[in-house]
Length: 191
Image 1: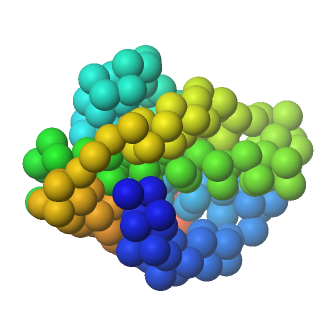
Image 2: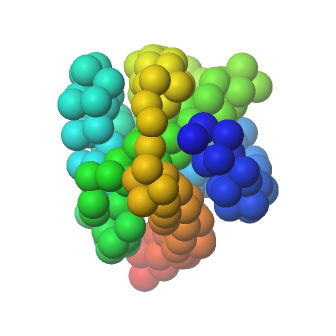
């Protein structure tokens, strides 16, 4: 299932990496956009992720929304200013929850790379809770063997794949919408 997910989501993953990779996280505005996009994407996906992590993986679920809310507030962007995205229908059925977890937990691996390379808050003494979090990596480490132990019917595999693709699409949408965040803030400051 894991290799099927990698193959099925490969193009979506590549587009998302390219989009977020276009940001210069050494700049405050780009870091704020990165964090804002993650907050918007996680909002409609988090309850599915939370249930899966606690029920299936038997781990305490990291509170990414709270981390992001605190990080954004410190950077002058309240969560209330973010656009609320709809919950994708593909992530609603419980059968697809592993696909949502695959996307969210997998994103934490990318954060490790960003931490090593440095980002605006870390270099200026105001590190991001979300970027510095290590508990998400533990979810990934538990998810990989979970997948290896499971057997999935064709219907279950399709639900997991569909939910993973929907989660990637949600992150892509959040990234696109996040471009308006800086413009809105500039207008508020000037207006």
